[in-house]
Length: 306
Image 1 (cartoon, helix red, strand yellow):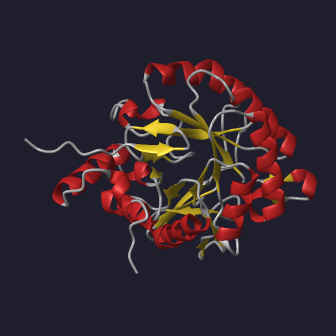
Image 2 (cartoon, rainbow, N blue to C red):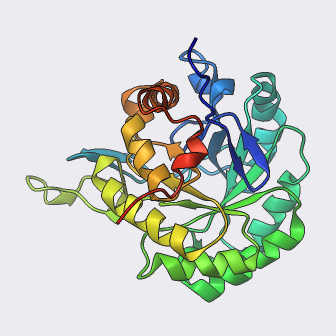
Image 3 (tube, rainbow, N blue to C red):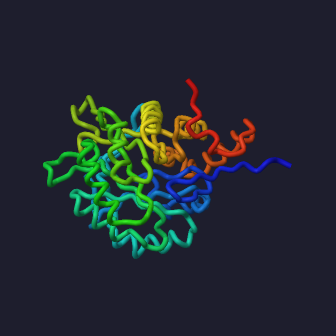
């Protein structure tokens, strides 16, 4: 009789049955994937980022395939927080999934208002704040690229909520350690990284960008080495749990992040290739643990050797 492998992890008091989540913006509101597998079997479902009001996003074309990756400029299209709470969340609760809500704003006030509306709502287990947005009141500076701006924003949100607060960091910074420490000191309970890298692809026949928005966010296997490096650096710099994101297509990719120092991972672009990718990765991690005779996944966290 084989030994049962323990894939459970603890993210800031949030107990997960396994360390595999979906990445916001790549999995809709979770319900779209119910035909493919039981989403309640995942560690958590991170839903599409929410704003105070519904957002139409950017005009098409909004997605371009690139070598070993994908550029997207969706523009944070979403139904808005009120529709999510009234129409999407009740169905998600029926799935028994652990739900993490990603949200964003264009001003500090919008972030605070969203956090207040989502905190304490039954069926919402944690919040993930996307700070990769431009602060319109500060002339378009991105919240997540200035440590002082990010610190002040997270501190204000922290004061408004009691749920675990995960801060999703942008890789488009000079030193990820500085940003990680800034938001940890402000009260972040966990960090998720990386968000997409800014990129561009041009149609040389037309002499035009392939995206209507000109630039977009690069994701997929092409960014994984960058993401693993940043997760390792952030894990060395802070004490709060890290959630690794970036080009995870299979179990071995997820294990890279765990060994680098992540306590959990999020699967994004892979779901566009294989809708059941996140669940396949859970099974693959369990198989790896059996083959390597590893009893607890937590034994691997940060186990990278020089």
